[in-house]
Length: 167
Image (cartoon, rainbow, N blue to C red; front, side, top):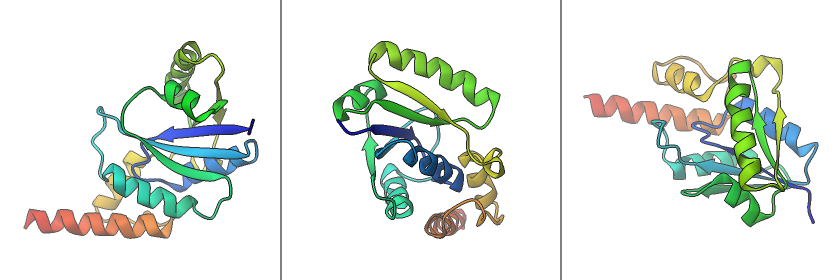
């Protein structure tokens, strides 16, 4: 059996912090599936298809990485379905850990063969959150240090679309 993990998130947008966690996961696992999930509690800037495109473009150069979309269902069921032994979660601060710890215990109850692996990103990404990047970019700020060039292009396009809608 391959040493396989899933790395779930909304990835709205996929940031360099996400990429850093993915690279760390690839040092541990032979295969990592980036799972783009819909979250009804979050208002996404990008559609799930747009997030799939951007994440695939950013991660396409990494052997062993694939990008999938989870429209509905439990993450634990998806992990079981694809034969993943681990769920990778990036943890930037204590607040992240508290929530992720609770989710890891629940996922272990739902799928006892899965282990959650918490990875800390490089310190330069500890304050980078997709929500902050979205807000700064939509207000015209420079987020080029925090996202891949293709993501930056998509964010500029999205900002232009929003500006056109306001006219």
